[in-house]
Amino acid sequence: MKARAYDRLAATMSVLLVAALAGFTYYLAELSRQGEQEVRPRNVAHEPDYFVEQFMLTRLNKRGEPMYRMSAERMVHYPDDDSFEFQRPMMVSLNPDKPRMTLQAARGTSSAEGEVTHLHGNVEMVREAGENQPRMTVETEYMMLRADQDIASSDQPVRIQYGESTLTGVGMEFNNATRQLRVDSRVRGRWTQPPR
Image 1 (cartoon, one colour):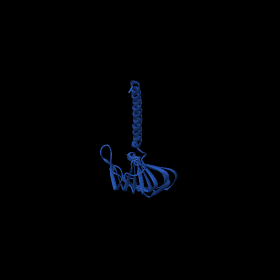
Image 2 (tube, rainbow, N blue to C red; image 1 turned 30 degrees about the vertical axis):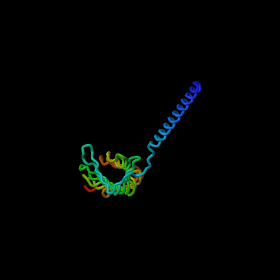
Image 3 (cartoon, one colour; image 1 turned 135 degrees about the horizontal axis):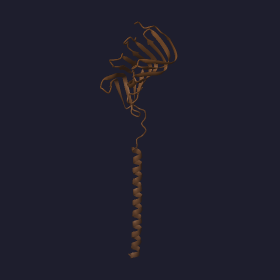
Image 4 (cartoon, rainbow, N blue to C red; image 1 turned 180 degrees about the vertical axis):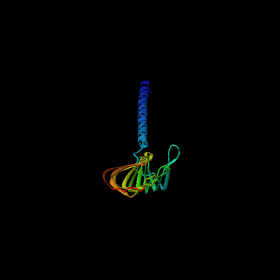
């Protein structure tokens, strides 16, 4: 073989090897890119990842004292937004310095930290009688509870029984800490002076 032919063959082989190496590198890069796309998290559907039957939880304040107890026939957790759904939820305040307050409904939802709870269907809130105050019952179809602030509110029609007095209206807010009740509109009532 002549030197010139040998140089051409060596140059051709070098070009073919570099081209094959470039093609193989491109192939590996494409495989890697496709693998990364497959590994990326997909949008999680709003589907439950676990449930609990006969659920009960006691929430404590920063001093470790019980604030309220929540129970439900069934609790379902959704991982996409870390929310909870409840069937037949019931919340009971546990502060010994205030009259006991009980909330119950047909169903409810709660945020991840439990800061806000939405109650739906046959909602009933009862505050037991306390210092010179009669028993109070509020009935509505929807109520939002901000447990840390001790506030319950609704934008739906409400019926309030305060001792022997009755009040109806649309929209309300009850602050259990200050014992203030506000009814927003269409207020009608029958007031009976509570016995002293």
